[in-house]
Amino acid sequence: MQLVKAKELAAAVKGKILSGNPETLIESISIDSRLIKRGQFFFAIKGERFDGNNFIDKALENGALGALFSGNLEICEFPSNVLLIKVEDGVAALGDFAKAYRKKFQNVSIAAITGSNAKTTTKEMLFEILSQRGKTLRSEGNLNNRIGLPLSILELDYSDKFAVFEMGTSLFGEIKTLADITAPQAALITNIGYSHLETFISPQGVYKEKIDLFNSIPDGGFIILNFDDAFLKNFKPRSNQKIISYSLNKTSANVYAKSIVLGSDKSTFEICATGRSIKISLAAKGEMNVLNAVAASAVSLAFDFSLDEIKRGLENFKMPQMRMQTQITKSKAIFINDAYNANPSSMKQAIKDICSTFANKEITLVLGDMLELGEASDKYHKEIGEFIKTQKIKNVYLIGEKMKNVKDVLGDGAFYTTDIDNLLSSIDKNNFNENTVVFFKASRGMKLEQIYKSLLQNNAISEG
Image (cartoon, rainbow, N blue to C red; front, side, top):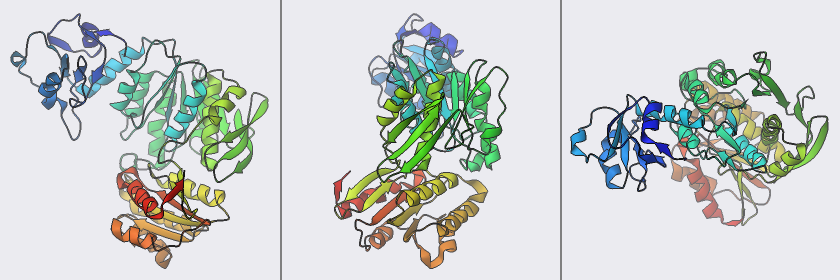
């Protein structure tokens, strides 16, 4: 973070300085009193499970130069040189500060990505492309909500040339807020699917929320439009917004793929755009990741990157952890961990990709619950069971309360339990060999990666 004066911060968040010097220079902030470094400024954030206002003393003990807080605080208990700024809402103040801070970086080209699936993978692909031309900032991990995204924006530096930020949402109005803070020049919605249906009820609700990112793009800015998505393909921009469309294989799109070959360790294809094409060798499995690469390419074109630069960036890309992460066991069986998250659309696509990529092998599925699907959760899980019946699958192992619905559809064609040890012992009875692919997928809250790791240890890893 670039240096900011206390009075500048207070003005941005509509806060009141109660003590300390308004000219104090703040070089970085933290929202975690346990990890705060000496000289940092503490933002006391009130969340669902914690209230940072209760840890101001701890933050100061650990070296914080002051704190931003909401609620009541006996300031007489603190030395007069401690910088204390009072606000109405700590989370809103963090967003307001990030919004004001972002305005300092008008020369940085910023892209924002949201969608039901593939946000992180596409972001990482785009990062590899953009980084070739200069220092590029990206949001790390899952820092994509009303707390995480502002923290990412506050990492902007005057040496940055590009930035790419991921946006997540679980509440109506959240994307609008995040887009207002970020002010991107280019926006990508990867797709509209069955995510956070406890709030959004249906894909139509997801569309209503996600489309606020497109609506936020200023005149002259770029909308990156997925022609393969049933909801997005008919979006009508304002007259002065620019569109770059993309598709897996529709030649009517501005950017599309052809000559796709899906391999067990990589995918090869040609990206077609600007009147020419170029061959790509991508270290990622499945049709979905080819589409992600095309999407990242379309964003890159908005920033005037060439197909040659796009090729170099994509071929330098490596899949993030727990997204089609692959290990080969001592017996030459292939274990694939895609357990970072799951919803009905991503679950079906992933299973489809595994079956097409490894068409000549025996597929074993290890699946856990898809969470946050609301009242229709049972229905969506049963649909997964019906979908599995259309695929060539040898074994299916299910864990979690909601996966009982999949078991009801598959009957004797699946093993079901809610006990981890029971699952592990049952899977370990298999004779995994060079003809075996074991695929793991569930929502993040199911922690299926722990089962993946245990099975790998039991089967011994030979190479990755």
